[in-house]
Amino acid sequence: MSDACKLAAGNWKMNGLRADLIEARALAESCAAMSCGVLLCPPATLISAMAEAVAGSKVMVGGQDCHANVSGAHTGDISAQMLADSGARYVILGHSERRADHAEQSADVAAKAQAAHSAGLVAIVCLGETEAERDAGQTLDVVLRQLRESLPEGAAAANTVIAYEPIWAIGTGRTPTLEQIAEVHDALRVNLPESAISLLYGGSVKPGNAAEIFAIANVDGALVGGASLKAADFGAIVAALDAA
Image (cartoon, rainbow, N blue to C red; front, side):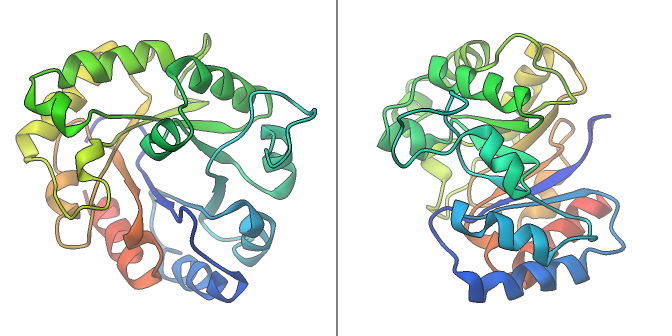
């Protein structure tokens, strides 16, 4: 562990209805005595309701994306100010699914991060290589380029978190070796605009492998997908981080 703040962030992606808020309440109860940060990022339809459901607990709520503009003719989009107004404190930006499905470029991510900062949100900026890039030995080049191009001026520990998610490990059950994770996180640490920015690992993080991942020197937490949907699973991951 580094000196950065520890954070376990759950990305619900396009999952969750109001009935599923019972999982957020259960997580809040199970994490009451833990010292690390705990975050859930549900679909936009649940942000306000989840913020109310976990009010007064350790669990924070975030969004999964935002528009770079404050307002305007952008049907279907949500501004950072709207997220904050709904009770969000964080927002995930540049996730590989957004980069792939919506053709988002690093410059778009930087503009969104700047908007998030202006709205008082912490931006979780995601980076990661494809399997082809990994196999070609380009991982560090790709990830460090994304880092340079995805962060706006003024990015610091108070307003930014970095999540390294190798694209080939997201939702596949495959996980890089501990040495591969350490190599990327070590390189990111020395290239951050501020060394205290938290570095999260994401990609098939589960209760069974969380402790060994959190034992890596420059891993400050995790961005968790499917395992964050159930309080029992995500609570076990949070507990592993709290003990690291």
